[in-house]
Length: 189
Image 1 (cartoon, rainbow, N blue to C red):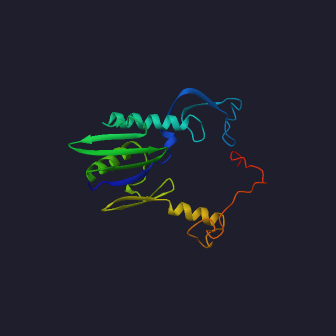
Image 2: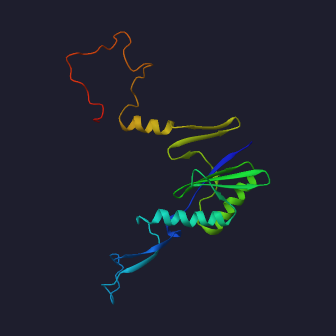
């Protein structure tokens, strides 16, 4: 179907979220009001590090998408769908990362413009990496692997140069039960 997947990143996403409850913070060091050193600030926008910030950002983004003709996924609440003249645009949200694709490239271009009208966004680019997954988009389909992640783990634990083996055990010497040994507690790690 020629479905290409793209990605965008929201810059300072949490600053777009409005918080509903009353939250107050102390005056930050270096920004104290000399006339009112004992006063606190009332927070009206979400700040990075506040536990309300991700929810406030998501609510702001979801409402914006819903007001612009998207439907929320029935199973996955972070999936948004827009149908237009037999074509479909899918948008998946993961905090401040957005991946999206469509059966029609023009819908992706329109989505990029829609998002940039309201939020500061990185430019639309073809999805290649997402949440540790390597994504290759080819004519035959979309292929996902964790090659980069596996190589990083091997390097982290100094296993990059370890000789590989087709089986994890010596097939010439089969394992046998040791009747004198204590049972292993499989719940301990």
